[in-house]
Image (tube, rainbow, N blue to C red):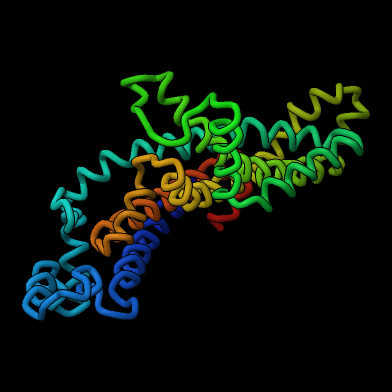
Amino acid sequence: MSGQIAFILRRVALTLPTLFVMSLVVFLIIRLVPGDPVRTMLGFRATDANVAELRQQLGLDQSLFTQYVVWIGNLLHGDLGKDIVSHAPLSELLAQRLPVTFELTGLSMLLAVAFGVPLGVWAASGGKWVNRLTEGFVIFGIAIPDFWLGIMLVLVFTGILAVLPPTGYTPFLKNPLGNLRYMVLPVSTLAVGEAAYILRTTRGAVKAVLGRPFVTFLRAKGLSPRRILFGHVLRNAGPSIVTVIGIQVGVLLGGAIIVESLFALPGVGRLIVTGINQRNYPTVQVGVLAIATIFIVVSLITDLIVGWLDPRVADGAGT
């Protein structure tokens, strides 16, 4: 068996126990928080009969082990449960909300990569003034909270310039132009910080590769700086760049919870916030589970891409 195939099988095999542990953590976090979740959901006017009825309905009158076995069994059969407020199947709610979250995080990451990678390469190969300019952007992007940046963008582009809507959403297939107008501000809010992290990592990775002996050899052979940079240096820096992009997807998913609420986007993040406000723990549980699962899958894909870009990673994993 080749090193690449063994590497892929090992990474896939490690994902399965990771998913199991993640599901266990999500399950326990909801049930082991201080206080009685049933009384919290029903409010201070709840009677003992109401509490007992809802506890039985949610299966909370059983042991934690039994609750988990039932819950994970239902998940494996595609039954995510029901929202206790609207009584709608959570599978339908996720099917409606996930495309919005995918669009938000996908466009944000594309924008962050489109700016972060070229600026990082430019910073690594440019002069002092380029370094100062990009360093200022990195400090700004990392230091500014998403919610503050989002509010400032709304004040400028909605309050002052009046060119973009502050909140709302329309599906892309229904109105592509309207969809993009609604997505400009939330996507920009998330992309700025991610672009800063990607820029910093790209700059460091490219600088490290530029200092290797093989680059000096290529220069001695008379290759143009552009060919060396884009044909050799960037490929060798690729694993580090891909790794940070995969990590930042998790940050994007976390930031989407805030940004979706700020811009009234009907995604999974806003579903979680609404569930928390309503004390709707089945919805919160499934929403967090969906976000965590997406991040684990993206991490797996990132590892596989890094192993493909750098065969040494795959060979090392197989030894």
